[in-house]
Length: 378
Image (cartoon, rainbow, N blue to C red; front, side, top):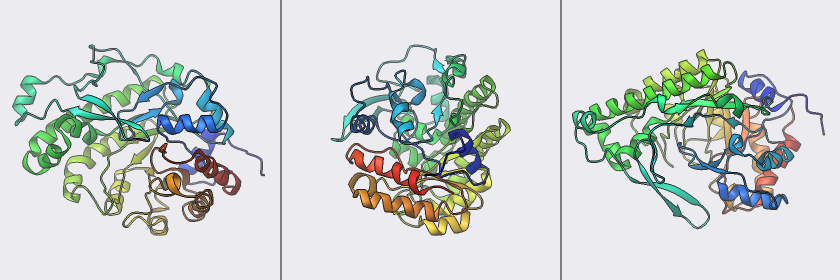
């Protein structure tokens, strides 16, 4: 086996700068249940399980490295040679929030789907309003002053050799929770003034929160997560016109802020999104995730051919069949294919295309990382 010549942070930076790393970097995304399963498989179950945190993005509940006081998850990932990302975030210090709610007043209920629990929004505080004026008169938007940013430098101590993620936005996800998903989509056509008003508020909050993070640890944030799920299994969930009107202008503002702070923009966008990829690249994204190559119009060869010199690919390990239901050999073959296709001449970070689910065997997770570590050298 060749000798590593880069730290995880250096390895990511090489790929982000469209240079060849010593080997293909690897990232880890998983549900808490899948993480527990992996830890047990690696013989680490005798130690305390890391704290599980609620990530207010489309990723849902996840394990945060920076919140793991035991070092348990870090030990597992370092054993598998995973170049994991450490997320930093401010601590909430504002008005009291109900245990089952978030700062926006959305309320959640844990729903057990058999192989995992997801917190689903069951109360939408803006659902009953029919005008911007009603919202202005009856609703209080969160303020960035409700968060304490002074703890952030402590969160990266001991993780200096790893990529640091901080800041970013995913406002339409929050808008769907505020209004309810069905009403949110209806609003795009029937109540565009409400959409613009609310998204402006949400983007303004995300912008100021991100700016303060960058200011607190200048030059340390490598990745900012500017996301929005725009695709389904067969095509876009929104019209290109709606994406261009409601999302891209403010996303570009977030992207420009990240670039000014020296960070790269990690763009998470689920589903069949090929028609909108050129617009997102024009807006300035640096990394495209999750690369769901099994679905309509997302073949890896075409994406690499058309966009490989403009954007870095992250993900592409199929989470609908291969990781949960495939054999170990199928997992290994997919790794080889991804490295060969997406990793040609660099520009690829291997990861699951969404949180690994507990329905699959831990052997598949281990096989994924072992195969990439064995065959991903450049």
